[in-house]
Length: 589
Image 1 (cartoon, one colour):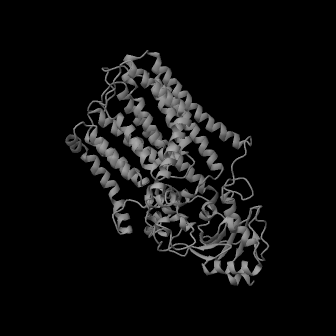
Image 2: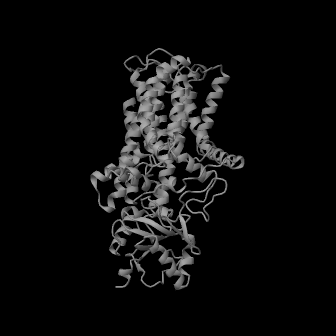
Image 3: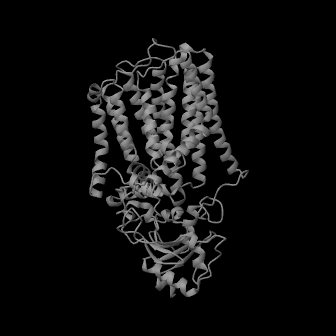
């Protein structure tokens, strides 16, 4: 089979798998809390509401793209979330195209070739490639699809797939620069890709500077590297500069994002966000405008600030934590680093243990046979960039989708050096090792899909209940978000209402579809205390809801809490949501 046929076969398989995942996500109305925040930001941007569109936590690009598509198509309620999933699919396709650019550049390096001034293919001179072309591309495609589906997860409504595309594109330019003969446009493309990546997610700003520093170093001489890399620096500053300036003006100081501050407070200092019982959080300061607790047992919290969106604490955590400064504590920091190391151990030694063992064995055999790989191109910079990413996230918080494209870069940087061992090892050894790497990667992808099919067919029950006790899947008593939204409309809620919610607000996906804002809430842990309280105490809580400006109370009633007995509550269709009008004129009818 020819190389084009092998690549086309992989493309068809990858796109088919991605389309299948997208179809399932559409059918299940898949959405997540972060996704609502990005869509809310994009919605504000396209209606010209610039203040909420500029957010210190959620970067704008992904929300602007998805929100722009929704604004253009204006789909009905039941197609809003599926439309976003289709947008994710096209971003996945972009990511695949950018990955192919990266892997093609690496093949040029791995086959010992150098590009000419016109960007041609590898020259025939040089050592033989460690892997035949069909196996090299098969390894790359298997690595890509595993990272995209198992780590990023195509159905996740976050900018991480867009980040992957920009990381792969930037990586391809880094490799071309390191291989020699790069033109100015290559440097410009590198800087632009890093800048666009920052517009999609803030961590690409510090990581972008790391990539630029590595680009300087691959030239061998610092002054030469600085001179040649200036177009990349200029492009990065021009693309990222306007957002940095806007956030700096908003914060009143030089800043590229507030995401790192909030993430450190939440995951390292472990502040009890969004609720705390007092205005002072020990060691980190006094929040300037925290959520107000207006009732105890049940605890009722009110969000009366200027922040919009379905759930204001989630829409803009920067506002609610303004005034808090991260506290450095050695024990807390070491604990988070330990968590990060445990994560990487699980990723590289458990999930990818066989692959790591194969790569290390090939390296060990090559070194024992006298091979001495030289860092003469930009491939090594990919692995170093990836390690810098791993280290950065380990200091604060790390999860699979954050590091997925850098895991690909890490393996890409190592695999590109197998060519150095080819003259020193039996011909069959690198090839057998490459086949085993592909096998284990494909096995992981197949296991992921078999598990998904088992859940869809009922062979394994789907997970529908989160830790807070709220159903978030399409099946179960609570119903799908569009069904709930339409049922709430039928029960009397109008679009754009301010509501009080008894339930887990982060997964109140229907609130976005209703353009509703949760201005007061009782979390699930306190729901029983509300329903079991005397009638006069429940009335007092309802008055606190009214004082917060809520026109409706909505409750997600689980079997543990039981149906409400308070007069005036009515069920929203066949869902497990109950509603109560809080407008006094409506109550008196």
